[in-house]
Structures are given as structure tokens and as C-alpha cells.
Length: 629
Image 1: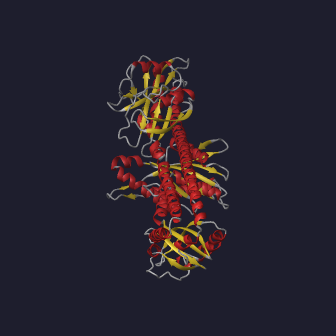
Image 2 (image 1 turned 180 degrees about the vertical axis):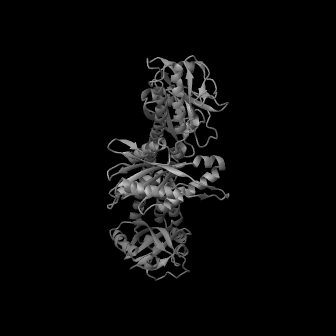
Image 3 (image 1 turned 90 degrees about the horizontal axis):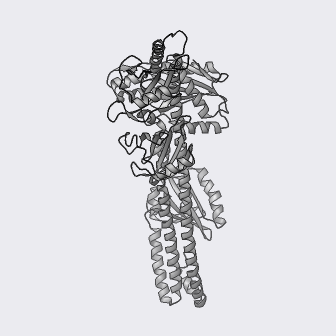
């Protein structure tokens, strides 16, 4: 700063300065073109990458939803098959006796399946009165559907029907009942509300403009869920779809992706579909294109702003140098103007600046003092160590940062520094050498941005009701546990489903149900050992990971202790007292087992515990590849 810009310009020869200014203008135009080209290319690459990431997210969601739906349908299919098989059991001499035996089996399996699927019902071959398993009357089914139920083999799907009244849509899933000679004597069917197809907690990852739909073999809409739509019956039974979906399904019937504007709500989405094998259903999951690619627009405006700032700065400098040759007085005026602009830049309100020599502050602007809570002039000629949080970070900058400056490179990093009152502060720190052993440092306060990033990451991995980790938090924990050198030698995964929760929820309301879930979550967290994890998947379903359990007996002891803590009385804020129990499915695993496989085994074991009468612990047997209650 000992030699002013005006004095430096005055020392330049007139003719070389003129030639230099001409070349600088040409170089400036070339650089401007290169910057704009780079911005355009970067935006194009970012948009393509965003499209690929969104397609991948939609594919993963469609795959998960189709897998969940196929698993749920297989349970119902097995129940229908059990009822149909009962008709061929020995001891039933007449068709009526066979149907009575099937009706008994239907009642038993209907109770196991629960109220979400409704009761299993029977119909006779002559198309007479349709009766539920308990003998009560139910609405008549369309005659063509009855004919197909009595004629076709395997599980049959109807189209959407308003069986429970206007706006109450449902599907009829059925299997034919044959006698021992293979001749049809009736059919067993379940009336499944469309809400059953929209019950997966994975749909919470759709975003604001996302949508999930389930379609039949003719692409007729069976069920649909979109966060922005209040009604789940919009378009039910309609076969109107976008041309993009129809063309893509013709090319790839099993799975694929496409981008189109949805005909029902006119929202453009990036979609993926997948067949619900082996059933004639198609799951379509879409993510809002505008929502998914919003970051690309932000990057475009940011890059354009940076490019414009660089071009303006280069243009101003070129203009200044070009005019410098005209007259010494005009050069002084330009130098004075640039000095004033520099002064405004140095005295800005947002970016702290400090000039350092031998790690002592020789100059700083007022923004730096306000950022760190110091009085005007208090930082002058003080060691820079005052601004660092600890000796390690100060020494790290002294090594890596100043090494970059000595090599002529610009140094930039993000780290936590310290205010005068001792509070830590996240700062974006960048420095550059200005020669003669001095360096100029710029500091930007990014503390609020860092805190928001940490809060967003925490919320994305936690269940809002109980505070326990959610499915995403479980996967992150599992990945981190597997990556640690001291990972546990054994791991048990348990699916836990509350028994008695639904009566509490129905009788006392959702607020009481939420209170029960919070208490259960707290009891699980407090009763678990160090290193174990409790996770809420949704509803009254929890997952427990037990590390370092020696064997099945050890795991059972832990689970029985947890069940004991759950069974304790729960006093509600309303003054009442309730209690719940739990059915548990357990899968023992080793270091090499994948999380999805362990959770699948535990889920199968939980189903076995439910069938065995609830309130039990069922274990998946690796040797027999089946659960054992």
C-alpha cells in the first residue's frame, strides 16, 4: 500500500500501455466467452445429473412400493388359497359341507389378516346370496365378476368398485373353490379398500409435488396418493394416462422411467414404474420435476451472477487501463475513483477482511470486528491465534494454508473459529498472498447455514413423533456400524408390532395413540443396552438392532426384558390407564448379512408370531429358511 495505483500507472510507458490495453480488451472478450460457455456447460451437466438422480430416486421408490405391495398381496393370496384348499379336505361329503368347512377357515384367516383387508367371504356356484364368513349379508357383486370368479383359476382381480357406498372404492380379490373332483363349487373373495394400496410409509419420501398410483393391466387407475391432493379417489377407474407412459410400458412392460405431465392434476413429474410381480398390477412413482430440479435453477443464477461479476470487474479494469494513456490527470481521476471503490469494498458489512504479517494482524475492517465481537481497533497488532477455536486448527492453517500461499495458490477452507466471548462460529476462510511476506484474508459468517444443514440432516433421519431414528436413520446407522473397524461380531434384527394398540387408538383417539407410541419409544430407548438401536418404521411397527448377542437365547432374554418394559401400565394425560404388549420376529445375523435380508427374515418371523396367537417371540431359522414360534 506504500505505492498508490496512480503512481504505478504513471511509471508505465505510454506506447506499451496502449498496446497492453488493446490486448487486454481482446483477452477480456475471449475470457468472457469462455466463462459464459463454462457456465452453460456446468448448468447442462448439473441438470442432466439432477435428472439422473431424480430418476434413480423414483426407481428406488417404485421398487420398494412394488415389493411391499407384492409381499402384502402374497399374504392375502395364501389366505385365499388356504380357504380354497379346505374345500378339498377329506370328510366333507357334500358341496354344502365343503363350503361350510371353507367358511370356517375363512373366518379364522380373516381374523388373522386384520381389519385392513376385511373379512374373507364366500359365494356359491349358483350365484345365490353372497354371505360373509360369519353369515351376515354383504352387497351383491356384478354378475360378470361372479362368473369370472367361478370360472378362472388362480387369484383374480376386479376393477375398482363402489361396494361400500358412493366414493368408497374397493377391489375384489378372489380364488375359485373346487371339490375333490376339480369341479367348481364356489369362490372365496376379499373386498380390499383402495386405501390398502397406499399404506406404505415409504410414500412419505415423495415430496410436495410427488404422486404414487397403482394401475391394472389395462392401465386403469386403482389407487392414487399425492400429498397436494386432499382426496385419494381422484380419477379412480379412469384409464386416461399420458402418451409417454403408454409408449414406455409398450416398450418395457416390467419397469422403466419417463417424464410427462400427469393428466389428472397437470403436474409435470419424473416417473418410474415397476410391475408388482407376479400380479397384474403396475406401481407408478413420480417426483415433481420443478421441485427436483429447483437446485439447477439456483445454480444457474448463482453461476450467472459470479460470471457477470467477473466480467464486470475485468471490463472495469480494461476500461481503466485503456483510458490511462490519454492524460496523467485523467489517470489520477480514475485511480482516485478505484481507490474509493476499494475502500467501499474493504468497509463492506458482510465480509470480514484482515491483512496479516508473520501471523499478526496489521489491518482489519469493521465487518471482521463485528463478526467476532471486538471493539474498533482492538484486533490491530494482535496474534491471529485469538480468532481460532484451538491450537490444532491454528497450527493446521499455519501449515497447509501458508504453504499454499507460498506456492502462489489461493487457500480456502471452512472451519469453526472463536468469538471474543468464547462462542464457536463457523467461518468460510480464504486467503491470498499480497507479497513481501503479507497475506490478505477474507472471512464470511456461515454459522446459520451450517446449523440449518445439521438440523435438516438430523430431521431427515428421525421419527417426528417418538424422536427415534426412522428407516433412513437405521440404514445410516447400519452403514456406519459396518464401516467401523470394531464392528460387532454378531447382529440380531427384531421386528416388533404392538398388540392391543389399535383398540386404544380406536376407543380413545389418535392423540392417545400417539401418546402410547411416544411412551413405548421412550421405554425401548431406556431399556436397550449400549450399542443397540430402536427404530420406528411407522404406525405401531418398530425395529430393534441388538449388537454383540452371543446366541438366540441371549437375544430372547433381551427381547423378553424389552417386552416386560412395554407391558407396564401407561397413564395417559387424559387420566386413563392403558397397556399394550408386543409380538416380535427375530432374525440372527452375522458380519456379512445385508440389512434388507435381515429385516425380511425378521418380518417373516413376526408374521409367524402373529399367526401363533400374538404376544410371542418368533425366530427365523436359517437352516430351515422359515420362522419358528
